Length: 303
Image (cartoon, rainbow, N blue to C red):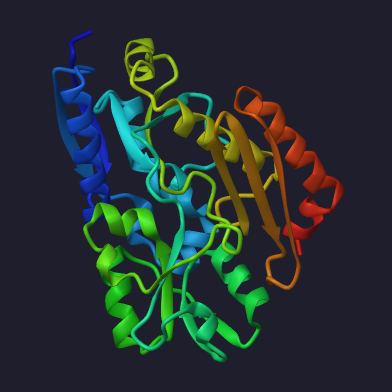
């Protein structure tokens, strides 16, 4: 196989910025000699909120890119790991790439200095996880569905006179827009989405050439944290629209995984954590999952 490859990406400004970051990394580190970008629109970029929920949520951001892989039009695709369903089609393989960016959620507002300052108001967010966290933080704060790229959401913040919006900090940093952040939210209060802040490369499971070359430059701790979070999410049997959070962090080879599950209406939630040696990340993630299941997490996700 030639050492020149084709990389599929969405057309959004953030997706293109991330794809170019990965392209530069792969070429600069000698993984591939040349990487050509193929940009395309996905179903997730074009459908409205109702269809987005009916047709599978975040997985719609992958559909056209995965078809390009299957049809040989591209060798790899780049995604935000948080957009990749926890239960991945066995025909595909994902590996993290680059070190994780700041995984926190952020509050952006032109009216308030902190999220806790709001006594009553409306926050823009299309994430069930964020909506649930807002609701059990302050039931007087309402959530309003907003979708679109970062620029579109920032425009809606002003046009729709919202009290604020909540976005992923990593995307703002990669777009050079971190100056708009009002407050970075503590991961213990707002447990991030599994894989948030991590970029990943997807390819066909049978593409050993690509998998072996990517493996040589994987950031090990990022790979472990992303895998642990995805194992937890997968064991919860939720989907991309379920209010599930997971955040793993490694300090001196000690891995701590924090999990979060809420009822759909946001009135009830479970939050817990486990710690242990990072090499045992799979067992730790399963152990945390077992704790949640015993506490009724699967029943809660159906409420």
